[in-house]
Image (cartoon, rainbow, N blue to C red; front, side):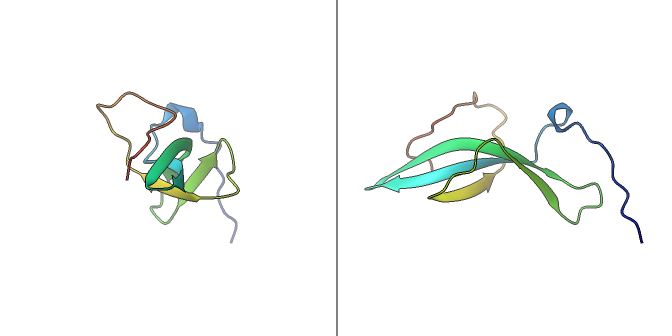
Length: 78
């Protein structure tokens, strides 16, 4: 059974989740946005698009905040 591929322009659709790289330094957490994720049309998975690939720390997917301005570093966010 062949899979139907669609050429989807991800930049036109708002992401379902934002991808954050989180590192811990002492008691502080540093959050840097590294990408986004979109739900598949069939509801059975997500496409994760990373702008960078961290080699340490962890990647956290969070719902986008609608009322907050976009930042590249949210220190202390948990």
